[in-house]
Image (cartoon, rainbow, N blue to C red; front, side, top):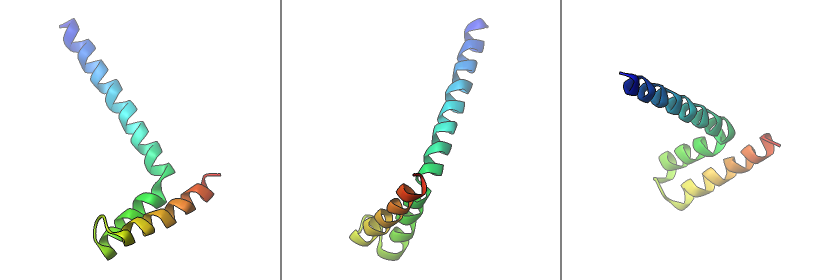
Length: 66
């Protein structure tokens, strides 16, 4: 029984840490993620246009976080 409780606590702690990391990443790179999604819709996923759009909004993220 004790092993199950320790395992469950470890799982919950890992899930919480992972969720906090994802939240931090999305807050820090919101422009890049949005730019990648917009560029993929406009120009097709993986295209040069999509990469440029993501790069432009990445620059705005850099300015915003300074």
